Image 1 (tube, rainbow, N blue to C red):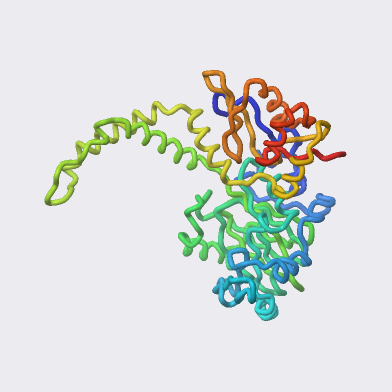
Image 2: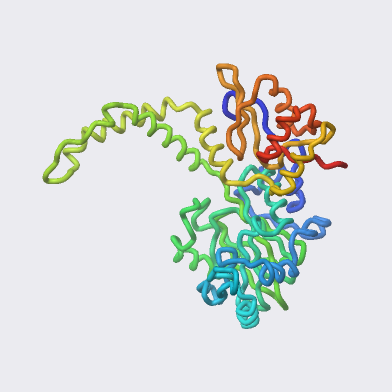
Length: 416
């Protein structure tokens, strides 16, 4: 944590409520033995009620028939090929000037003919998964997305491949046979898709799988990024959720470190100097001295970068990678307008708030909603709120409470 950070909402206050619904081992065992290392299979019997209420096949029908989804939120695959958007979309009709709205009629025909339906971005479109993925992201400290795969009987939606993010596979309905093989390119980065190693993946897929299993409703499979896998529906329609964990890596630290070193080097007047006029173009000999100057400046910059500055830069990326908990604008305004001194208030969930003091003595509230100065007489109030406390509106100060409700920092506390 960067120097000066005094308080932050942490999953440690409430355990790991989302992770505990996905794995039966304790969080320390999962972190030490499986996270980014080895697959883990957890059966429904070991997770009583683990997936209840998150997603089901009625949710699939609801989303594709009544929610007006557009192409980015849905794709269709057949025999390892992703279909073009026009094969499953159409115009929105009168009053909806969109051309790529999902067509339930086209999906009916495609699914009946054996195509797999993929619902993407469910962490933005389906309420229970919005809440669950946000909590899982807080449990893990890494961003989480959710997709659903609906596969007809005996069909394979996608051929053997690996993902560039860790995944939790949650079997929702039906059964699916999975084949899992060790990585050919361990720990791939986000810009290193499996197609960059297609030949090696295809060769690995011809060997015996390291893990072969059937997932049944309520079962969960964890796969670290890079592990090769494919799946086939058995005996009927199979629906599973994939929770993709877009892990932060040391490469992200390297990006921030280099960026800060580059900023430092750019303050060197010699680095900012123009290169010589070169009518015949650049060559290695003519630029060698210039390269040495820049290299030396970058090395000095790397050596002078404070670790806290790297953490601050990475956490700025972390804040924009996730959203705060959903908020209802009309209800918020009404709450602010009808606020009473006895009304209970708390910090909005997943707003990622912390208090940052500076050497001059002022304090800033930093969160996913931006930075906000904190008056000296309000610091104690914000310490309590950031720490997870519930305060009456008159303890926050009525004027400030109304303002923070309208800004989306505070929400009404659960009356229970």
